[in-house]
Image (tube, rainbow, N blue to C red; front, side):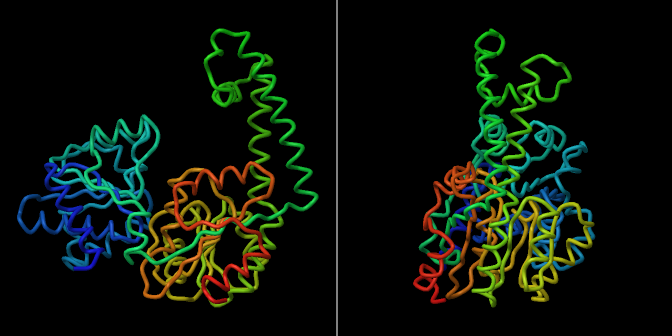
Length: 407
């Protein structure tokens, strides 16, 4: 029995032994969707259930689940009343009963808004699937109440077992241009000044004394008063946002992407970034044909973009905050994160896009970050629990790659 199959069987048994209520935590690439589809198939075959609701965060995952379910029953099952697949944005609003509810990427349903899903949808069996458990107290409280973790394997548990492709993460510094560096210093100075002023004000006000400066700024920045706490909160929030976007859209990162793609032209890449405008600028700046994927596109256009990428019409997919989950392309060789957040969850999901198993594959994940900025801290936070990491610069990268993958 292969390691992948053994883990999948263990996970299914753990869920069944917990009265068919609970969450299975498996790294992307280990077959979470397959585990969910297998459970559905077994329960239907034994006539233990008559109705299934599958809840997903994206339309791309709807299509992925349809393909997986069709492997067991054929396309006709998708037209039946037995199985319904919905995005959480729709599913959480409607009251109903189903025998089995499967919640893919369950961490996306644990917010105060979407947790109504568990109140509105009654069920006798509940299965959650995710690659990482949430860190926030509220999310953990919802998870433990409705679908506690019954089985968990983390990436470092399986990275040596050939369940996912071998990989290496490079954190590559990209020094800012003089223009971008000047903008960053300006917004950073304004942010620190606002932070200092809010700090003074909060210790003068008993109602603010126990609150974090960030929370104070977030609350008061939306108000219209001309009181000092509101003025400095607006300055704090706007300066922090503008400083962040200087990092996200650094010109130096475009040059770094150009160098990476030119040196590794035959590889299949996903490039993660944070804005449609920058994605379009990036697409124009690189020589290789690329396709852009983002949440503002029509469903059909997103579907076609993924089909073109999977069928090698384009070898570069530029994703704007929309592909952290839902893409299954084993042929992807690597990813470049041009602009990312500091959360470990997002980092794990993005890494998972390149880990689908393929013999002899060594996947690359490259985090580009602006040197001597807050972005350096973000990168450190999001990858702190992941193995196989190297810090380097764009010139040293080629020497390292020649050793790792023989470029």
